[in-house]
Image (cartoon, rainbow, N blue to C red; front, top):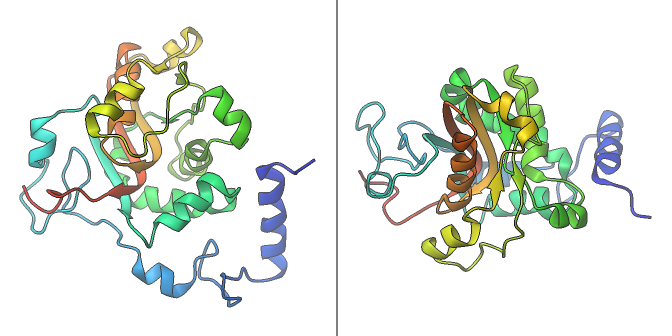
Length: 249
């Protein structure tokens, strides 16, 4: 029987105490198995960014200004921040966490979110990861968003509720779908279970996910959280896909 990701992660942590982690080329890595050259290529997102989706601006338009896309199509989540751009340099790291049992990367990525989402964390009262459907969780054996949310909660001193949201409908992959197709695909897919509503009502929630593309999944999750009484829902993601209008207001 193949060991679970937590067992694998614990084994890697033990080895890291004895030997420095190596990157794919066999040389010591800076952090989380990420070689220095790869680290330098990641585009970390710094202020100024759009308050609504975290897209970078070429210049500072002032506080709380939203890009044209956010003003044209408001989402159910209130604000969003991303640690880095999702491109050819960050994609491999995200996919390793998501599909290759690399849960040992989660604490590193949580520190990225701590930095990128510090203003959101200052207002948050609890952290909720975007859930997987139970059948996908069974096949993958872990939820990558929850794996990052746990160390983020520990770093920020906030409670993490990994079961505050349930994915009640098995959806198709969002890959390859248009923005409208993505919204239809996840519409009504998330609910707050009755036993968790008292933990959500009146609270400011920080929703955690891996990648922000059109925001359809986060929008559906935020709608479910607000339907359960959440006072506000902000979003923190590891990476954001760059849209055509991301550098303009």
